[in-house]
Length: 332
Image 1 (cartoon, rainbow, N blue to C red):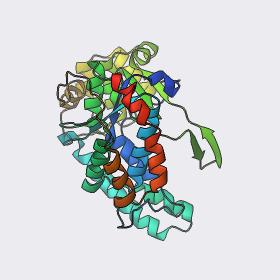
Image 2 (cartoon, rainbow, N blue to C red):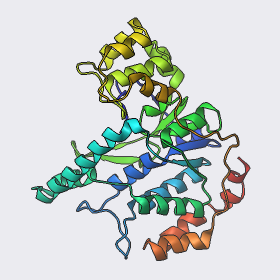
Image 3 (cartoon, rainbow, N blue to C red):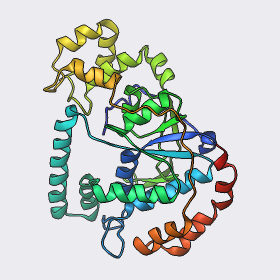
């Protein structure tokens, strides 16, 4: 879920066309979770194939990737590896939250409340991961298995200029060193605001790390301290400290004093968590990825025969890309 830096991080709306000709490293789990949560039937149940396998993530990945490729963007999906030890408590809390949400959903009085709780119970299991990778492979879209956090790897690739952007909804990417972060790239252009019952246009949003640092009088190192004081996936934060107070503290006090003076809500050393944000477990990649050949017939079978998607719609979507895949996109 990441750290809540919304109040101090400002982005600017951009057009998808501004990403044309660029490589975007995507936090795969972040996107897949969003697709599993939002792509559902009216009763709250996920899309499924004839065999009862969930296909909401396949739907999201396929059509969102088609959109990116159609706009001359190279998506590069980065998958999570083993979570660092600091995240154990967070993962346990999430599992408990999902379990309780599922129990509550069964007792919900209205369909809307039931759907709300069902969304909170979403899990990414081995089937979801492997079917996602298979789909992307058939589409010729590059993937990378990170040794640990996918968003850390994606951020590292961006900081090394191997990827032009990172795509994630989480602000943690800034802590891990990302320089250019794109949010909302996985969201459809129209999204319903359930609390008001109206639909609004949702555009991609670009966050430039240098702008964030300049506008707040921070460095990446100080932003990590702000995040730790508020609370991250690795620590619950210092009680009574919000974004404004955290900003004031990191500007007045040294890193050493801050890390030694507060209870950061973790059984681990605050210094160790800080060091992990600054130097996460990642792998070096020197070459920019390239799109592979789309295996059209196998892709059509995967979508329509194996996972029950409408064949005509799948074929039409693929055909729109054929000329571009053989032309401009392969020249990135």
